[in-house]
Length: 456
Image (cartoon, rainbow, N blue to C red; front, side, top):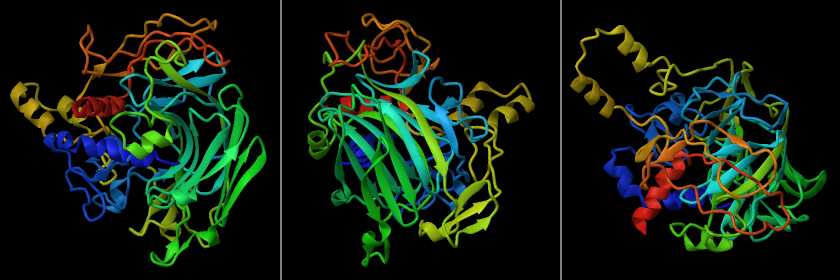
């Protein structure tokens, strides 16, 4: 249970030689990011731009201030019936007042009342994350899950220092939700517990995480199913509580635990290898459906370091509750080459104001020397504009996805994009039949898919 971080780490390790060949610095304990690429992403790589926004780990970045301050919690009821307030990861620059969600992969609106998280062959699915953080609160997600071996739907809270609270749903067990929690990314499978519910695919349930400074409760449709007290998590060796305690983003995802490139334990936990020709897919996609996310923010914990009301920052590399400060610092990056240390960097502005006689050779050399700005960009292809409807399925109005989804360069074809899976075959165990459009896979998905192909 709760293997999303482990799976990503395992897959990333498989193409570490590919990453090194591209000269992307790595980060982790004892290995902070260099000044030239100061921000440590959740995938253990260093860069600028999107690396410095949500998921930027201040503990392993060049400085604590390399990461952009995290926008504070705002109570809201998000009806997820469009992508109007969402942005792809390579477009968002940090202004949470205009954007509620950031995504990678292929989310799609469905019937005007929900979003689909889709997962096609040669991708690692879809991830939607909130731009604002929660530092204790009640967070509810109303959704129906996907199904099938190796297919995992997730609703989690994740902090930049990898505190984590989970609801996860394995596609071969539709009668349980798996609950879990972690502290600073330390794997402890004893923290998990199964919660009984009715069919998570055919039924739409509301899953609630009630996160308080002294306890966490997991509830389904208003019924409390599990409670963990902070006092029960004391770690005498580390001299701290192994309890999620730092500002966290809301994440909703659909991802393949059953990739051959994942570890044997992750594949077994996910119910086996993903069948990319399964009749459970619709139009070449597995999918989960999300209707609503509701956030009720709680007050900061007693003794909190409050020096404003707009953002969260860390004051110490311990990354614990007492090192979080609320400030009035808000930063929007000028470009994807900017960082928390230097948010005003904008090469496009510099080029437009420079002399028009700059040589092509020198411009190319400058570009090639730039650090990575979006996690997973290396090895990916261009942006696909192909939104042709896939054959099969009959559900009335087809969902509409984000225009210009990222496509990769691993397959032959007119635009060099990956195939979006096989045709639909058969029924889907009583769930709504979904007709989705042909959209590109995420940049991160493509990089991992390329790595898997290389390994295989």
